[in-house]
Length: 65
Image (cartoon, rainbow, N blue to C red; front, side):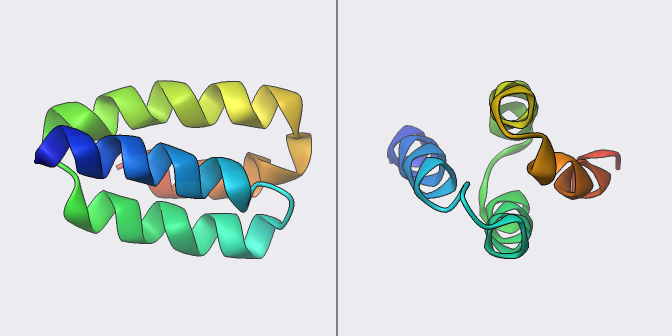
């Protein structure tokens, strides 16, 4: 079940990556509902999205903790 949530989160983040504000909100939601090891995987995924769309760079602040 938890793995399904991780895949769903990746799908949502990919779909909202056109809008940095919306992307940041979804990152915050993901950090609340994912397991710690999934958050580590999510950080790697988000960094790859940021490389494709530098506007999303502002959302990396939520991943620092």
